[in-house]
Length: 202
Image (cartoon, rainbow, N blue to C red; front, side):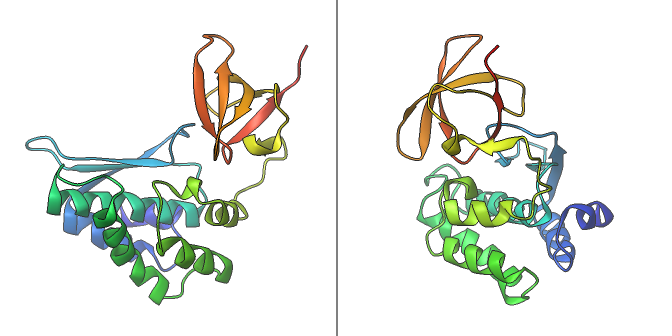
């Protein structure tokens, strides 16, 4: 597992992640890209392990942040079960604590260190909801020229998500946009910072 972690994590962070996996008995699953989330945590069923999944297409710094985010959920669950909000004060405190060693080791680039430190002052449900952190992490992606952010495309434009579904952008809410899935007519709230591919009208 340590060798796998070294493939996906920044240099200097794999040992810490491996230590967390063993300490909490985490079953880590590396998943194909999902349009709606970067990772998730699932509490254990009787006789099973804690489960964390993370998208395999994340760059190493985004992978680390997501892993720590989900590990904080695990620790929060072990302490409080379902008695507290998933992204409430208790989770924020656990996220700050579990991330601190990575900041103290100074293994991150200066811009990521700054953005993550700023984010940790009041972490949100996802790094995707913090524009400064998200855009900083995005700088380290293997850029695909055809991908753009939902917030940057005009209204009434068709776009395709990574899972192949096609939507039409119709209305701005706050940080999300009301979009209609072309095949079903269903309405979804899509984050403005989601990467998509514009579909040209035929």
